[in-house]
Amino acid sequence: MMHETLTILGIESSCDDTAAAVLRMGAHGPEILSSVVLGQEALHAAFGGVVPEIAARAHAEKADLAVREALAQAGTPLAQVDAVAVTAGPGLIGGVLAGVMCAKGIAAGAGLPLIGVNHLAGHALTPRLTHGVAYPYLMLLVSGGHCQFLTVAGPEAFTRLGGTIDDAPGEAFDKVARLLGLPQPGGPEVERAARAGDADRFRLPRPLLDREGCDLSFSGLKTAVLRARDARLAEQGGITRQDRADLCAGFQAAVCEVLAEKTRRALAAAGAPVLAVAGGVAANGPIRAALMAVAEAQGARFVAPPMALCTDNAAMIAHAGAELYRLGRRDDMTLVARPRWPLDGASPPMLGHGKRGAKA
Ligand code: KG4
Ligand code: ZN
Image 1 (cartoon, rainbow, N blue to C red):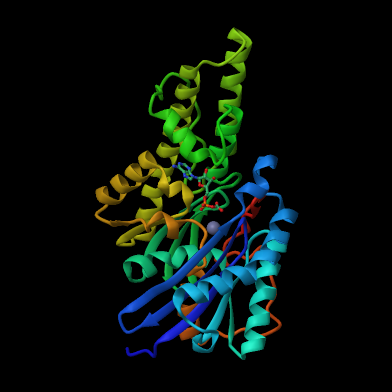
Image 2: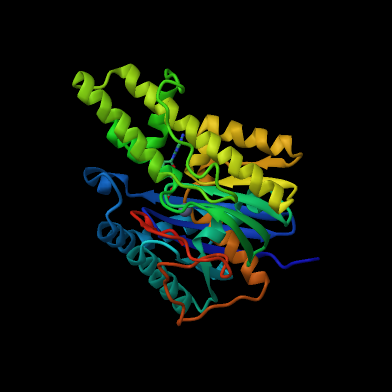
């Protein structure tokens, strides 16, 4: 099917990154012309987590700047943009609102169509942007805010096979790091510490492994690490470097084992030829290796986008917007920012409301 070339401006502000990107959908597939991400780590560092009000204010201040920079880096004047795609949820509502207002201003001012994009759809469609993966495929989204298995059959056709019933795995990595005195974000720190550790020394649970289906849970695992740490504190008044390494290794091995088994089940249920991952936790070496092995054992191709496109960015929003645009989707000034917005309307709502926003 022949398509006209489309140039889309994307805007993302649902958590703690203010991002803007310009993407071109041409005859040879999508091409990222620019992708600007203005992080907020420094603003939240003192609070040990993302503070929604601070995030919202920073997004409101920086969104225009990110857009201007993205257009400049792409060498694309606004006059050459065909549509504005913006994350309209799910996420921290103040930030989503800031992005939606910015997008509405640009769309109204430049007379451009507006497309509201689901942040999770942005992640879930990324394997098409980076690897041209065809529908259908199985997506495992594992980040600080999300954890779910989705079969992706089209830009608006998602079936949720399962997900976390409490914390997201990245959140658990971050909490484990915090309770062992390691810096944030905790994932890479725990992974590093785990290299010198003995994963079998502390007996940690494998949550929900014995329950059918693809749901996951990480909050009990984090509590088990806390208990083991407290036991060491009571016994010897502190934890040694080796204790810390062993706890990190044990925790990571438990996450690996649970994710691998649930992924095996999801892949079998989906019957999809491709397993794709997205989210910051997909950067974890042992987790990535375990997922790759699961895919290989079931004859599926394993696809992991480069890290910069696995984590929050606006190129994925522009790309999802382009796919929706081609389906004829257009929004207008009535577009609303949504704190919750499940991708699969048919599945029951996820429990919980994490620090990084609704679990969707
Ligand atoms: O996708 P992401 O950048 O952002 C949001 O969740 O919004 O994911 C960040 C999460 C953090 O919780 C971080 O600790 C985790 O991904 N993470 C990792 C690793 N690198 C980042 N978790 C485990 N191992 C890693 N190497
Ligand atoms: Zn995200």
